[in-house]
Structures are given as structure tokens and as C-alpha cells.
Length: 346
Length: 286
Image (cartoon, rainbow over all chains, first blue to last red; front, side, top):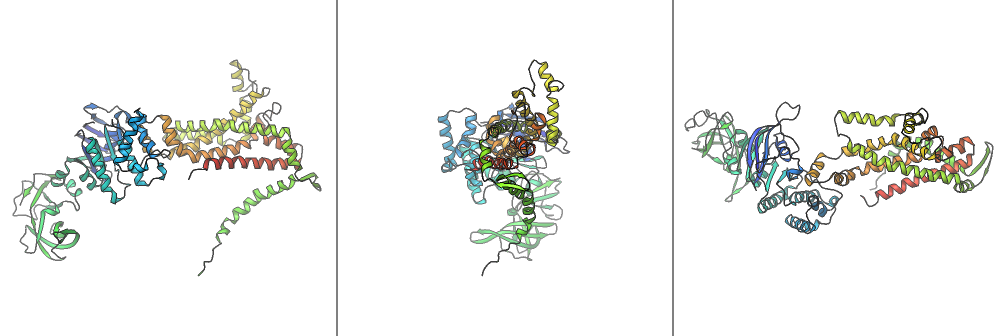
């Protein structure tokens, strides 16, 4: 398998005004599940196409195992890719589709049989083996597409471009787990492009968050969630995202790092109380039930304060229009959209 | 409760039915009517039953023209369809070059058929024509007015020049419907150019190719103007196809009864070939 080194990689579409990808350097480790997360238009697909060799970088280097591959064709990079919608040979059967990449690389037939069987079993579609592609449902076709991307044992990297778009929500989890399991077992380097934060955070060892052609942060899902480097990452990740308030209006008594313009805190880093003795106060706007905690209803409470609305996660003890005090357990300090410090406790 | 069936929709198709009746069905009925009569002049005619049909099918000139016609249609189809696909595959998908090539391809299709015949008649002449003179200068004896093989090859070349564009344009449209991701996936799979054609492009081209083959089959089977202008059916009868023999009969000799029977047989054969082709390619396919 393969590690990937990206060095000062930049891309601008011919005739385009702004670069689709601003200069960036990072490394994807061998056997790593790596997710690229961002809204549409953030540059995810551009980055993926650069890796797959469909686009040629405007400048910078792409290396596989420290060997530059800029000049190699897609085929010679030994990649496999799963597309947003199933891309299969419609005139062939499931088995023939899976055999195709192996036959093209001249594997012997005994190995081909064994390998395709393993993959079909893994994805639990062995019974589809002899079916024609046009007889399959969209979901089954996408499963076969995934199978086809995993079938070659000598693949360097598996690229997944929003692979679960065509998949029903109730099987998304299962399929993601299957992918993750195969990835771990076979120590595959997988790059998973998605706009869905749940998919990215649950699938990947590390996540790259992109916005407007910039890679803002590359970290483990946990760090991305707890310590967003940028305000954008804080608001983009989480549902609802991180709360941001200007630093002057609130928390006048709480010490803050020098130069703090805004503070950010996750909805679960705050608690509500009726005594108004919190760090600041506000009025409950609405509440949403999302589940129960120890039998008591819990969810999200939206509170309007002097400097904007904030969301607080936890027990739903307060009714709309009630005055509440808000206590912060911890927060992050931001200046010019960037994080200043590690977590500050209150 | 019962449902009142709304039949007003039929009124919408009435104009088409009327036009088709007058342009197609009524003349066809007239031809069928003629085909069972011996017409001496407009007031003197006898019912002869299927006599003309019998005579036509036993007429050796008809049978020869018919076999010639089949040979011609199969020859042009076997060149035009693959060549059209090759041209379409070789064209860029977009950009100014694609537009330019599309216009160039369309030119032969825009030329009136008798002009196509005239162009080739001059082009291929062995005394003053560019093609004819060049071939003879190269030491290849070529004279389409005297040598049946040369005449055949010239007629074939003319039809291929005239109609391959149609196949290429249709195939180009069919290929444009293949999403680029398919090519990308094939590239990653290590598929050869032939496999890309066989497993990605051909399945997508299937429907337009059926149309292309049908159109070319019908058109080539009815070819008249171009060989009439180019060779006049000669030398001898070697390039006399069905329609030309029919015209000689009906207009030249004024044998209306036999010509009508001939027409009906001709029509039924064309219909039969198209039906055989269409049902065989669409069988076993949803």
C-alpha cells in the first residue's frame, strides 16, 4: 500500500479567476482512512481529481511513497475509485464486472476466482454473482462498484467520491461500517470525499476540512470537533455547529486570552439555569427534543442573548420565553476567524 | 358508477391521419389497384389477378436487379456503419474542432442527390476527372463507363462518401451521451481501447445504431438518383438497381400493371427486411 505526500499543490482551472485549490502540503499515511470534508464548491473534487491524475496540478508535487507521480497517468497510479453513482459495465454480469480490473492486469484465473469470491462475501452480495447489472437496484449496483474498487490486491489508493449518495439512509451506516472494516483488515489507504460531516467523522482516522479552495484543518475527528482551528470549521462541524459570540459583550468577568475577538463553544459546553447567575443570560426561544438522557427529555435549547442566538444541548428543563442564565464550562478564543488558544476553562 | 371514455384525443391525430392517407395510403391503394389490371389506355383495362406478380417474380432481370440491390445495400452498410463509428470515435467531444468537423461532415448530406451523381460522374471520368485521371496516371486501369467492376466500386464509393456522415453524426450524438466518469473508470480498470468501445460505448450506441442501420438500409435499398446520373445503370445492366429497373418499366415502357406489381413487391421486401432486422435486434432486450 501507499502513503501520499502533497507538496505545495495548487490548481487553477484554465481561464478561471480564483484557484480551485490554494497551495497546500500534507501527508496521508499508509493504510489510513482519510476523509475530505467540505460543502459543494469547496474544492474537494478538484483535490480528488488531482490525486487520481484526471487533472494536472498547476504547481506542486504529488508523491506516492515519496515518488513523484505528477506525470503518471491515472492507470499507472494504480488507483481504484468509487464514483457518486454506480459506474459499471452494463452489458456484463456482476462477476464479470469484478473480474474486469483483475483480467486487465493479467491475474491468473484461480486467483481471480478466489479474490472475487472474497469480495462478494465481504459485501454480502454473493447471491448476485451471476446477475446482469441492469437487473440490480441502484443500491446493489453501488455495492458492486465498491466491490470493483476493492478487488485488486495491488491497488495503491482507493478513492471514494461521495460513494453513499445513491444509498438509502437506513443502510448507509451498515455500508460505511463494512467499508471501514475492509479498510482496516486490508490496511488500505482510503480517501473518502463527502459533504456529510457524519460520514467523514465516523469513517476516517483523519479529516481534512475544506472551504473555498483552502484546506483549513487536518486532524482526527475528535480534534476537529473539540479544537477547530478556524471559525468556519467550528460552525461547519456539529449539528448545530459551534456557538460564536463577540468577546466584549459577554463574560466581562471571565479572563480571556489577549486579543480575543470572539469566543466559541459547543452547545454541550454550556448549561442553563433559572437563577440568572450564569456567565451571561438570555431568553429561551425554542426547544427541540432529540432524545432522552437517563429517562429525562433532552435536546437543544435555543436561547437569544444580547449578542445573538446560541444553542445549548442537554436536559430540556426550560420553557420558551423563560429567562435563563447560561454557564460555560469551557470555550475557545478566536481572533480574525482563527483559534488563539487551547481550551479555556471557566 | 361507470367511466365515460374521453375519445376527443383522436381529433388531435386527425390531421396526421388525413395527410398520411393522401400522401401514402391513397397512392398505395392506387398502385395495388393497378397491379391487378392490364391497362391498355385509361378507358380500357382488364382484371388479370396475380398475373403481373407471377411474371415479375419470374422475370430474370428483376431477380438480377434484386440480387444486385441486396449486394449493394449490404456492401454500403458494411462500410458505412463501421466507418461512421470510427469517425465519431475519433472526433473531439467539444471545442471549435468538433464544431468544424460537424459542419464538414454535414456537407455531403446537404448536397442534392442528382448533384452528388454529377459530382462523381465528373470526378471519376477517366479522361478529365481528377480521380479517373489520377488512377490511370498511377498505372491503375480505371474506366467506370466500360468496366463493370470499376462502375460498381465508383457507385459504392459515391454512396459511402454521401452517407457515412449520417452514421457518423448519429454515432457522435450517441457517444456524447456517455458520462466522462465511465471513461475515467475504464482507465482506472486498465481497460483497452477495444474494451472501452465494446463494453461502454457500444451498449450506449445501440439505439442510435439501430436507427442508423434502418435508415441506411431503407435508403440504400431505394437508391435511384445518384447511380442514374453516374452510370445510368451501365455498363450493360451491371449497376441497374431495383428502382431504376422499375422506372424503366413504368416511365420508359409505360407498363403500368407490371410496374405496379413490381412496386408492391419492392415495398413489401423493404418492409420485410426492416421488420426482420428490427425484431431480431430488439428481441431479448428490455
